[in-house]
Amino acid sequence: MKKTIISVFLSVFALLCACSRADTGDGAHKPAAPAHGQSPGSCVKEERIVINYTDLKGIWVSQFDMERVFKKDGAQRGVEEYRVIVARIVRDIAGMGFNTVFLQVRPYGDSFCKSRLFPASRYATGSYGRELEYDPVDIFIGEAHSAGLSVQAWINPLRLMTPAEVVQIDERFPVRRMYEAGELVEFEGRLYLDPARSDALQLVFDGAEEALAEHAFDGLHIDDYFYPTQDVSFDRETFAASGESSLELFRVNNINALVRGLYRTAKAVDPRLIFGVSPAGNLDAVTAKYSADVRAWCRDGGYIDYILPQLYFGMEHGVCPFKSEAEKWAEIIVNENVKLYIGMSLGKAVAGSRGIEDRWAATQAGRREWIENKDVLARCMRFLRSFGAADGYSFFCLSYFEDPVTGEPEPDSAAESAGLFPYIKGKES
Image (cartoon, rainbow, N blue to C red):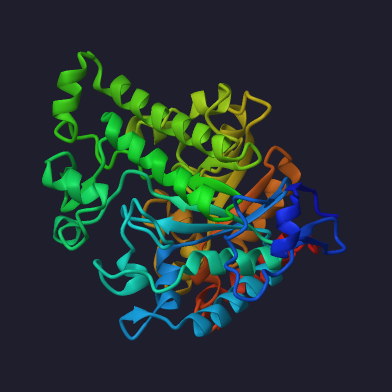
């Protein structure tokens, strides 16, 4: 039996909007399809159905998964064709046994949904400077909710487009104006917001509020894109102006303010919405490398509802073996209100099927683990079942399971997936 947390508040206007709920028969509820001509997000302000699962079974759906779905022949795909593809995608996701989608909506300071603060993404329209002809995210959310899936808004808060791209967008967007004013940081050809700047943080918070308030998401999600470098030149000016003596502590405090602010933003929109972070999986390096104070987030209130470390490692990894790394993350969960979810990926299974070694695994056994074994993730899932300290998991990403446009299974992950699906569906022997 699925354990779900489904928060529902119904208003009289919602009934007129035909936004209701229907029992799925398995303990979950899903919203009925919107009335004809009504966009899935149009009832958000009057009535909101929030779907979140205590036993999270998630999948990340990234910009690279969705780019060919959003576009056709260099422009936004026609709405009806898009709707058909998305309906099939969410059916497939639900059919695999997943109950939650982490849908990327802002990869580079741009947007896959209509926004007053961020320009339409070239991944959705074909190029910067074009407007969305319809809102593809609202359609995705509507189809996903109809399939009983929770949808989390996945944003990359600090990473932006390139200098050549930012000049293509209209000056009504803050990132263009900040670029012209010299208020963005360039690193290795890409622009970033500096989290030490209050106006930069406020833009992130405002963008998150806009996405959550105007679209029927069930929560907010960020991954591991914090400071892109440890180089002192990245924020030399703001650090000097701060009067702080420790650059490391300065950066940690800035990322803490970012995470705390996003948590507050989500809860201000609707306290039933959840917020969490998916940091890099090596616990011993995550704070030093990314300035991510994950121990504080998992100890103190007001930061996160869950932590979802990316344990993209095999059981025989020479530096971060899956089992011991999961145990380390479990040990830092001091706050009983913070859940631990485990992030995994089929990426190395695909690479292994193509004869590519895991070059960072340090040992010979670890480097060849994904080549010589097709049950690595099944063994990881078996461990999580016996471990008992994790409340769920998520897999990266849709394209490693199937072609997003055609639905054809990915042949290079087929053997690994065959052993994985029984665990996701709860049918393992």
